[in-house]
Image 1 (cartoon, helix red, strand yellow):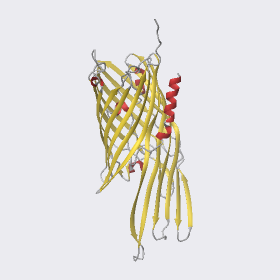
Image 2 (image 1 turned 45 degrees about the vertical axis):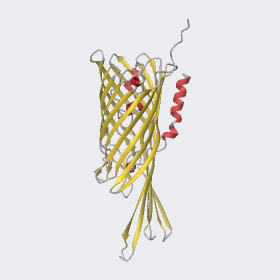
Image 3 (image 1 turned 90 degrees about the horizontal axis):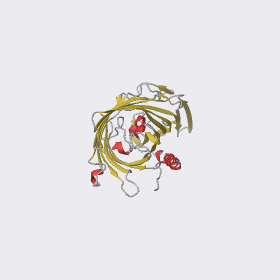
Image 4 (image 1 turned 180 degrees about the vertical axis):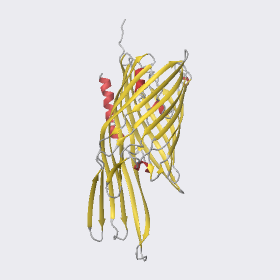
Length: 429
């Protein structure tokens, strides 16, 4: 029990690291930010599939029903980080940005027969951007030109700490639930200034703190096709609800000529909703040799409230976003998990996915996302341990929308799964 508490403490200590922004994307200035990749180190090599997976030696928090498959007498702890390089391109202009991010920490164990428990801390979204543009306008007298500068910046994002259980009431049937605490902040700034001092400079600050619950339900059905082949179907439902947050818009105007400063503040009470999510997946496993899986996820953003500056105030509205759709496919192969050769124990993973955006930019849709991944699971074998694993994967992600910035990201994900037999009773002869 002391080791379980220690692992939970490590997960909570990861909170400051998660608070750092893991993105430089200008698209994170919309909505709750750029949505984080879900899944831990083992299924990121398969591009994030997991709704129909029931690993006995990993914590698959994508579907809480899978916790019932966790090995008895063991405790599992998994933590991961990512390193990424992103290229932003608009027309002939190209820029690169680097990020490093501590992504998640999760743990789990078998609490009773057919009952598994998991806990952890996860990213939900990231906000991180800083850019500016300049231009010029002709004065009314047509004799002089005024230059202006617009600066945009933002930080923040949402995170979740959760506790989940998975139970198998009947052979082949499992159900589960993750109960989470959702928190974070959204902080965005726009500063407009002019060179002549006649026009008023404006500074807008959009700020919001979020503190609310999150609930996700899962179910899985497993069917043995023959002695080695197993088909698993899974589905999850994430509860959509109001976050009961009160976003604030502060507008400060200043004129260098008159030295008059005005500040106006607007509040959009109960102005942000978290969307409902419906997802389903299927996997087919051939013994311990290979697994193929397919997932589909729908996030219902179209009816979610979000505040908008309409020029006269700050008002929560629906219809600012659109429903997003995501399809992922993944494959894992291992020659022999119990083989004498070290190379035969390595797990090879591949995956690909496509998703549509939830954000709108004016009247246009945000960028569609295409991604591919590959990874390996390297067993840790020594005299004390033969169940832990180092998971390493590489992922290429492309965000592309006609007429907007194109993003190409190369990401390395590294995670270590600690799997130890903590609850076994020793026998002496």
